[in-house]
Structures are given as C-alpha cells and as structure tokens.
Length: 253
Image (cartoon, rainbow, N blue to C red):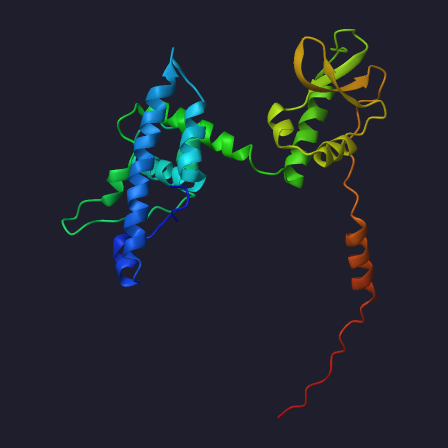
C-alpha cells in the first residue's frame, strides 16, 4: 500500500474537487496502517521491551509518510495523555491532520487512531520510527558541525588521557552519525576538528569508531571554520566585479 498517495484533506474537500475515490483509497490505507501498527507493537513486545523490527515491517508496507500521518493523528487525539512524551506531541503538531466529520458528526479520524495498545508503547514505537527514518536521511552541514562540536567537547572535558594505553584522549563518534555518514562526511568531520595528532580508529574488544589525539596535544582550540568552496569563491568574485546599477533621476510628471 505504499504506492497509494496520502490524502490529507477531509472528505468534503475531496468530494468538492472530484477526488473522493482517491480519498476513500487513502482512508482505507490509513485504517490498514493503524491495524498494522497495533499488530507490530503486540508482536514485538516481549520481556518489557519493544523490538525495533515492527517499525520496519510497517514502513516497508505503507511507507514512512503514511505511518507518520497515522501516528501524528493518534498523538493529536491523545494530547491529554501523559504517557505520550511532550517531544512527540510537539512533533505530531508539525504534521497537519484536518478535522473530518461525517454526516452524523462523527470524526472519521478516529478510525485510524492507534487505540488498542498501551499509549506508552505507542510512544516508544513513535520514538523508534522517528529515529529509523532519520537514519535514512543524508547528513546536513549542520549535522556534521554538531557532531564535531560534541566530539570536541568530550575531548576537552577529560582531565586525564582516557585511552586504554593512557597515551591519548579519545571520544567515540556517534553510531547514528556513522550510519548516515558517507566517506566525504567523515572527511568533513575530520577537517573541522583542530588537532594535528587526530586519528579515527577502532578499539579492540569495543564497538564503534573513536577520535584519538595525543595527550600532549593542545586541547584548548576551537573548531576549524569551514572553508568556502571554490565555486562559492568564484560567485563572490563575480558578484564583486558586477557594476552597481546606476540610479537615474526620474523626471517628474
């Protein structure tokens, strides 16, 4: 069902614009997605833990857009419930879900509200879904800058060398960052950190990649500034060479 477009406007709008069949197909898919989410939560909750596999199952079948639409609708209708986190309530408000009442005044949105599961588990499912979606997105310049700032802070906060050999300061690169990072992204991260002895490496018997600097490195340095690209430099030069427009007096009429 991930090929069916998500119709976000109510039935009255769809009927007025000749899109009622698309609306009905979308509404049917919303209800099916809601049922799939409830099934995924029930099937993957064991030993007081909700497994992440359910998110992938629903996303593969319905796509992230519809899954998020159904989850946002659910949270908006449970705004009173303290078992839903404030962060997820704020997130849900960023996804428009319009009022959609039928002839009798009943709200059609209730038909695709995740309601047969504990709201606390629904909240965990939303957290997992938002994280899994984020991991599919390419890194932005701000993401790389933020990770560089985080690593710098960790390297500067240690009082003594914290590597197993005691010869280096080290900080682990975020696993989430590495999942999303290309080779160029890692190179950009490396370039922002100001240390001459900097290396990225693994550690025996420990998962992940770590940033290392020698213990005698000057750690009181700010992040390096990103250098403008050659293209940006050329654009700036061309802009500077452009003659300023000549202001001409406009004759009075």
